[in-house]
Amino acid sequence: MKTMQDILFDFISKYVSLTDDEKNAILSLDIFRSVKKGTTLLKEGQKSKDSYFVLKGCIRTYYVIDSEEKTTAFYTEMEALTPPCVISKTPSEYYVSCIEDTILIVSNSDMEAEINSKFPKFETICKMLAEELLAKQQIDFDEFKTSSPEQRYLNLIQKRPDLLQRVPQHQLASYLGVKPQSLSRLRARILGKNKG
Amino acid sequence: MKTMQDILFDFISKYVSLTDDEKNAILSLDIFRSVKKGTTLLKEGQKSKDSYFVLKGCIRTYYVIDSEEKTTAFYTEMEALTPPCVISKTPSEYYVSCIEDTILIVSNSDMEAEINSKFPKFETICKMLAEELLAKQQIDFDEFKTSSPEQRYLNLIQKRPDLLQRVPQHQLASYLGVKPQSLSRLRARILGKNKG
DNA sequence: ATAACTCGTTCACTTAAGTTAAGAAATGAA
DNA sequence: TTCATTTCTTAACTTAAGTGAACGAGTTAT
Image 1 (cartoon, rainbow over the protein chains, first blue to last red):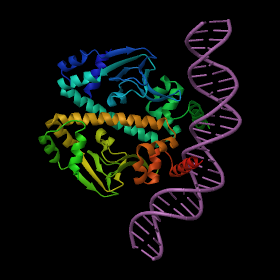
Image 2: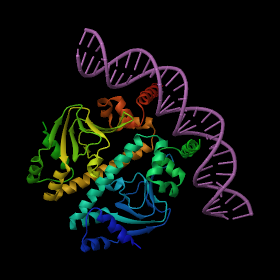
Image 3: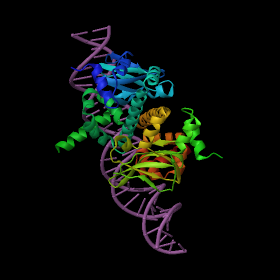
Image 4: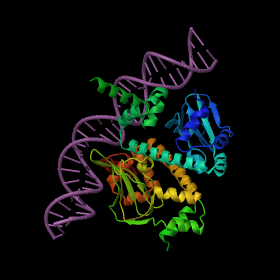
């Protein structure tokens, strides 16, 4: 049975190899955190220096626009989120909350700077991660722009089928860029096509 | 009158300060490149290690889907593009071409690795740039998801009014996620509203 | 147990985007 | 210049998403 630490180091080993010293330096930071379903990690208007890495569970980001929640992203196992407000050093424009009981790595940007100066290798990890995420997100954005809500939904079934199970429909809807009623209708339409 | 080199170093100075040695190391790479309007920098299916930084002019990325061009991004002065295929080391899914006579910095990922090992400071620049771009793109994506084509167009007028002047309508249309006819209609609609 | 909510679905109606086609205006090439 | 091509707009029609309302199923709180 893998511990959370094993999971973390397995992940990092995809990018660089770490010495025991470096591993201990990471562990000494005490960054693992367990949070209950429903917990809000970041609120609109708040300032924060925390980044999140999901080891187990699921978190989502959402805006409140005209007193309506607009969910824009889900982060599940092995996915990382650095809210834009951490980079821009301005109050957050959105909320981050847990939609399942979740185990996270929470890293503070000050702490990161410190470990970066001690172990330059971490700068390399972070750079690679950021570049990889940027490339991935570019592709996601391009797919979103070039497809219809129905295609996006079918695409989601292929790429992240787990989300359909673990996320409420109305949150999925805004993630797909439509209203919950439209997602219902769109699903009924697809079902009809497959039958007829 | 600013030279292209001045423009580059002014930009970098926003992130870190460079010694003359470091500046010379950059210049010795011979990275400046002038390209004519219409030049294709990257084709679908091609492999490449080149990243682009626009000093003057405008480049766009587009997919060809069902023999139709789908423009997904424009990069203008002081904006950088590292195509996903450079990160993933797979053939490119899209085209990159110049829509104006353009002056670029073209940097090769091998070359970057070399200069990174000589001057660790560059790793820091790249990391900051990547993180900043990631944050910026997250916000762009969120705005796209949470708004209608009309809102996106109005948003574009606010945020990148220059694009309306320098980019053909049909390229703007797919950038906004609609067909050219819909963009025409949508613009007529907005005009009508403003007249009353 | 019941009342109040939330969630997902459905329906009827409105609004806007996709589609097909046509024509005017601008651009480029011979 | 002239011819051909591309670009932009408009229009009529189709399709799908937004809106407001209603309903039942499942939760939560009292």
